[in-house]
Every structure is written in C-alpha cells, then in structure tokens.
Image 1 (tube, protein in one colour):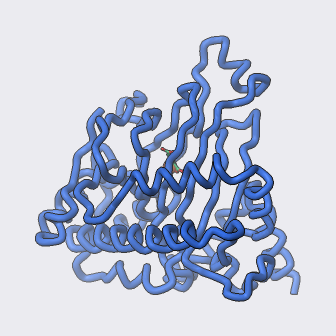
Image 2 (cartoon, protein in one colour; image 1 turned 90 degrees about the vertical axis):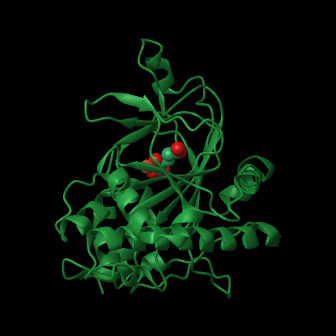
Image 3 (cartoon, protein in one colour; image 1 turned 120 degrees about the vertical axis):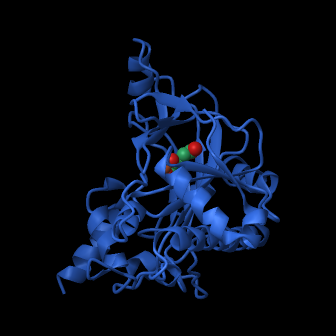
Amino acid sequence: MHIPSLNYAESLEDGKTAGIQILDAFRNPGFLFVENIPSYDSAQLLKWTRWFFTDLSKEEREKLQPNPYRGYMPAQSGKSSYKEIFEIGAFENPHNHPKEVSLERPLEDTNLWPENCDDFKEFCANFHKQMSSVGANLLKWLNGAVAKDHDWVNLFQPNSLSTLRFIYYPQRPEDDALLLSSKDGQRPLHCSEHSDGGFITLLSTFHYSGLQIKTDEDKWKDVELEGREGLVVNIGEMMVRLCAASGETEVKATKHRVADLGADRFSVPFFFEPKWSAAFDGKPYGELVLDHMKAFVEYDKLHQVIAARDSK
Ligand SMILES: O=C(O)CCC(=O)C(=O)O
Ligand SMILES: [Fe+2]
C-alpha cells in the first residue's frame, strides 16, 4: 500500500500546512513518508550500516556489549524477531570508561564505539543530529495542528534520550525453531508484530521490502515505496497519549512487522524521544521508561543497575 507523503523542504516554508498533513497521516493509516529532506543521504547510511554488521568482525561487534543501555545486541535464534542491533544516543564519554553510568539517569548511558572508527563516529554524530532536527520539526508542525497552547518541543530539548538504532536482519540459521515450524505454512518474521512505544519513529528502509502495516480491517499490507528517497515515519504509544491530553484522540500507533523474505535486510530507525526530565503524569519521562523496561529481558544489565540503585 502507499502511505501519504510530506515534502520536507516545502514544509520548512509552510509549517501550518505540514501540520495538517502530518495529523491526517497519523490518524490514518498512522504512517507517513517524508521526502525531499536536504542532505539526507541513504546511500551513505547504508554504506556505514553494512560496514558495521558485515565488514567489522563478529568479535569486534561483541566487544561493544558491556554498557547497560547503549551498544550492541547479537541475534537470538528461536525468537519471534531475528536481528542484530547497534544503538547509540547523544551522550559521549570522553574518558572512555564503558561501565560507568549515572545511577540517577541510567538512560543517559554513553556510547560505545569500535576501535579506530573516527569516520563512522563522525557520520553517526551528524546523522543523529540530522534526525533530531527532522524529528523536532515534525513535532513542531504537529504541535501547531493539535495543541497550540502547549510547547511540546520544549519536552524534547536539550539532551533528548533519542536513539539511533542500526538493525541487521540476517537469514535465520537452518535449525532455527521458528524457521522449521514455518515450513508448515506460517510465514516467519524478521521482526514480530508491535507498535512503537515512544513518540516519533523515523525509519530508513533503503530499497528493502518486508515492512508491513496492519490496516483497520486487521489485514497486513506491504509498505510500497518504489525506490523513493526518504523516511518512513510513524508514532508510538506515548505520542498517542501526548495528543490525547490535548483532545486529539484519532491518531494511532499503528501495528507493524517485518516479513522474513529469506534474504539479509538492513534498516535504521531513529526513535525521537524527550529529555529525561520532561514531566509526564507527574514523573520524569526517564523514570517512566525505566519502569516500562522492566518487562524486557534484553535490558538485563539496566535492571541490575536499577536494582543496585533502588537497594541503596
Ligand atoms: O526494520 C524495519 O523496517 C522496522 C523496524 C521497527 O519497526 C522497529 O525497530 O521498531
Ligand atoms: Fe517499530
């Protein structure tokens, strides 16, 4: 299916019209394609994504695991999603002490980098900044259409917890339980059905197919982009709540998934998120996320940090 599109460069001149278009897309189907973004270069992004997952050795990637939140996660066979992930945020640690993390704000965890990779690091820092700026503009335009009297952008800046996630979906190993069971007719997935939890997701899918969204009739439809350059954008559950607080109750965090097409796939979502201290339901946003993460096994190390903090 085609999703509505937004011309970003034109929107920079007319944020009011952009706000109406964005709101309309987030009401139905809940996805938007943003194109004509000055200096967005998906070829460069794909080059670095491939470099990280296929040129860098497995051992080098596995070294990037000691931090509680940021860093690398290997693929796990037999699980409903099969993917390797590398995540970075906006916080750097000049002293390069990977295990040091603030007990007060553990999600402001610092990045971990492969050795001798200044060009990769520079690319990532610039890309993180570019996505933050696109996210902030989309938010500002939507804010104008939904809640003129509240400044949402202020919740996100400075020091947002936004995450740049590189994903590699390798082919499942032949003895993967899910692949074996799929031989009975059920199509395996690379990424299982979910709605995003956060605010605004800006996704680079390159030329890969596989992304599917669930329609109101509970049917899965392939997102068709026909090689266009730009970002697939959708909102998460927290953004739905933020809109609802201003009386906008029609926007939705549409369910989506990634079909396993039997070939390698790469994608790069950017999760545009508020700063730690932004108040939601009377709590700092960072504390809300920590609570939410207790349900996820992948964040074992983060749980240990929180348990140590809470026992003090
Ligand atoms: O890989 C994709 O195309 C989608 C990824 C996704 O939905 C996510 O990471 O939340
Ligand atoms: Fe998602």
